Length: 332
Ligand code: AMP
Ligand code: MN
Ligand code: MN
Image 1: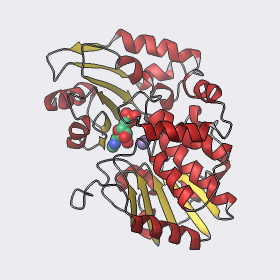
Image 2: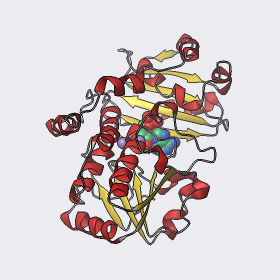
Image 3: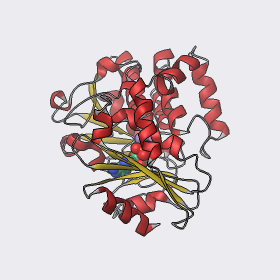
């Protein structure tokens, strides 16, 4: 998967033109984002889906999970009606577009569909993107895939209404950590201004994203923080904790409810690197990592079979908890 790594520049005019041509001439378009979708993945997918549907295209959108479930905090996004279970996804789409997907494997059960699609347009901002499309709209300098999704909609000559703007804004605000990360350029603020000007209720969006956790979340958070460990000698300092299936089951929390825990743990000033190990419903450890800049966690996670960005990356481990954290520790 590393043989055809892209050289990492912005997207060429030729690639944009080719994508616009392919999409404009297709009747049916299949959209997909990565498994366990975040705000950027699903927001970008639904934004383009809504724009294409308004342009008269038949649109199907999905992500490749065996237990297909839209994360609770993304159910307020407009365009849910475009979503189909992977079983109902077109077997051989005329044009397939992927969002926020750096490697085909991150498409889960939709991975094989990429081989059957006649044209595959890849819209992404991961530096590790392998360029697996027939057209690759990949810009590692973009703060979010939503930035590229917005440009695609513009280049298609389609309008951005309030529903589409909501989806794009959610991608932008989640991937920039509410405009806190170093990726937050003047262009990012300009894009936000344009989106908000469509009439977005940013207070309501923020509440949906961050202030609607069930009460059980606080109890699980309490348990998870109680067992947090600081290892100042590892890398530039490592702070880590874990959340098991049993922790979640005790309060009936689905997996996606615990994804935000890392944002609390990473506040630790004594640590450059944060890791939260989350046991999923299949018993695998989904490991989220963050760095404040001393360590490139995408390299560390890539070495463990995952990937991501320099300051936010992850990997999946089928080893026991202690061995999983040991494998991470060894690379820091
Ligand atoms: P998360 O910690 O889930 O917010 O993910 C942070 C970054 O790491 C995102 O860019 C993800 O695409 C990437 N990432 C997370 N988990 C994995 C994984 N199991 N395999 C590859 N990349 C991952
Ligand atoms: Mn993502
Ligand atoms: Mn993203």
